[in-house]
Image (cartoon, rainbow, N blue to C red; front, side, top):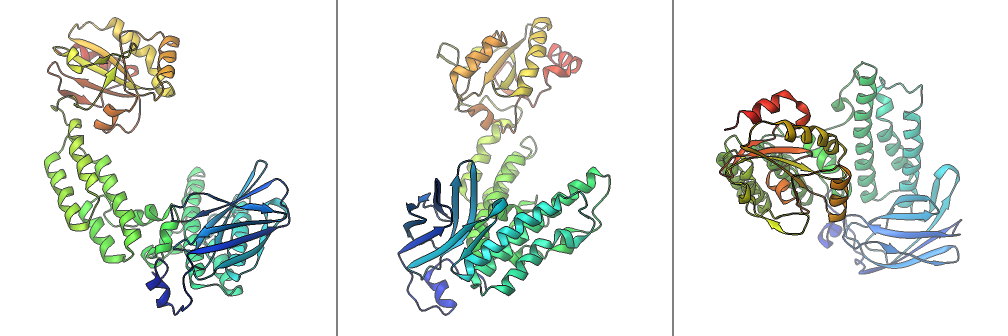
Length: 442
């Protein structure tokens, strides 16, 4: 049964007449309470971390009822942390469970069949994952990768689980199988072999499993759904498929947000910017996308050659003075976007210094802009590397955001009028090609 877990109406659909509790008392009794902390973290519900109060071997707390009933029970002892899925039906005023910690991280629960089933699958997941990395693991056998689903099915047949927990285990084991297939593909690739089966041989299409409010309790769900969309890089096609095959509004909203976000970050802004913006604006209205994506897209017009230096970028020198980019008007400006913690950035410093010293073109100036969050880190690294010349600081990375920079070091060139000449210019370490480019600027 699906789509039954978010509201009073949903509860009534499965024939439950008991009232939903506003508050619930949870008691966890353990076999090892010495120096142990226990906490509950609601899944899919922004309630924060709920610390449980120790009373002998028991831990107690009163919680606001989570709409889904699912929590992560977190146990911390010394350097060991355990995270255990825990379920409290929204109609129950109290939940009492005995939690036993065994050897090698094994746990067991006594109380409801639901929590016994969740604990049993968690143990099976840990043990089965270890077996996947055994030297004799046969990755060419699809049954090996599909073992998570097999174990979840077996557990459901043993315990009298609620529909909610059955749904949770179905999604959980699907994700584990999906991820194991990726692992199998990487391992076989290392052996210069291919996996002799496809993902669809193991798993049904995600819409048959993930079209549920419980899917959003899993961080991987929306990316798995996105990965299954035909023509996923085509904005309209992806959104049409999503609306056609999925009904759960929470999941759809998350996937739509992901689709729009990727559209914005991966669009080639130098190619048909206006058409791309118009397409996103129409999709926003038609499919209910967050308007912030279209707003962000419009801002990234700064990445198109010929666009002026972004107005909202504030650059400061080592003395804390704001430096207007117009200071460099009349020159081509070769910009290096870097940070003190970026190893590849620091490897470019010697080549950049050599380039600055040897370049024979007084129409070109060099500008290094740090995106360090802390001023001290920026200044310390400048001193260590003997970085000279035009050194400015952009602690909010406003320029990187405006230019849609996906990683540093990043280089760009602005022309004498302060307009973008080249987005993603060659690195100093690339040698003669960059020298020829810069010496040819007149």
